[in-house]
Length: 224
Image 1 (cartoon, rainbow, N blue to C red):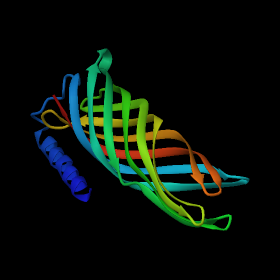
Image 2: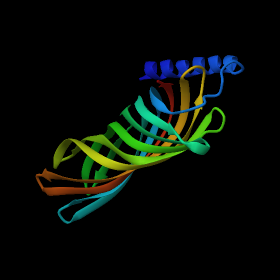
Image 3: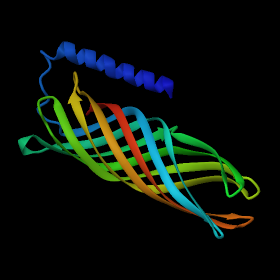
């Protein structure tokens, strides 16, 4: 992941240098219409809160998963009149965001690691072209997978993976570099509900919670 991050940031830096030296010769793009594809890298912090019920006992808790993300995106833009740009974009991200916990619940020792393994989104975009710049807002839906590996002493060892859908909203700005390259900076918020149940030696453990993920990332696109 570090090698991927370094390579992508170096590509963005080189493209930016090329753009600054070619600004005088490179015309401002007269249209954003068309397909594009690219790579991105960023950071995710996800706030997870919820409650668990086992028999007559209920416990609440919260945690924050943090880590690097990286992946790719593909999309299509339509430039309308008055510099308005409509688009649709899909992306897929690998993630190493995780959190580890060691505590006690009702006298039972608990140790575990929660991890987000991947997520993706499909979103619409609405932007307004200002010279080389395209500020935009975006919204749609997402999906992802989280895993839990934990031990509740005397009750059960858990190793579970769960997939969930999510809502997604965000905003960003994209700018034209030299040639057909563009670079973007983006923030996304994603929310999902979690519901699960586990059979244990002491009955059924029921878990309900919510996840709110915050994603900041930069990406490099090529317009076809």
